[in-house]
Amino acid sequence: MVPPGAVGCLLAVLAAAVGFGVWRHGAGPGLRGAFEGERDLTLLYVELPMLLFGLPALTLGTWRLTDSFLHHRAGPAARAVWSTVAAAVAVGLLAWAGLVWLNARVAPFTHPE
Picture 1 (cartoon, helix red, strand yellow):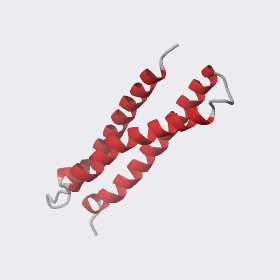
Picture 2 (tube, one colour; picture 1 turned 120 degrees about the vertical axis):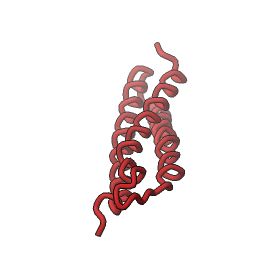
Picture 3 (cartoon, rainbow, N blue to C red; picture 1 turned 45 degrees about the vertical axis):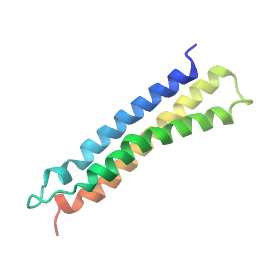
Picture 4 (cartoon, rainbow, N blue to C red; picture 1 turned 30 degrees about the vertical axis):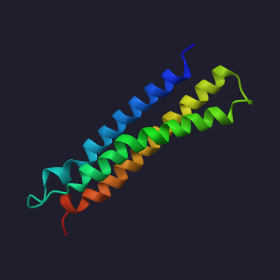
């Protein structure tokens, strides 16, 4: 059986990679300066750390809370499976929310009024 610490580390690395991918996809127009060369550098020092560190933190929190909730209610295998499923759902929902947020942030750069 895989130690829980290894699963947590793997989840954190995967969530950080997803966060970086979401940021790179969503922040591109704001960093390239799509409208008259204007760039939004807050995408670098606000949104990037938020997605790169916040997404793994919330994913690990979801994973740990699910594991704690099921501690006396299920066996070790079921706890591991349900905790990982909950973490995967959290990564998906947080990635979607990050894309929605970034689309709203870079809209003035891609669709100026």
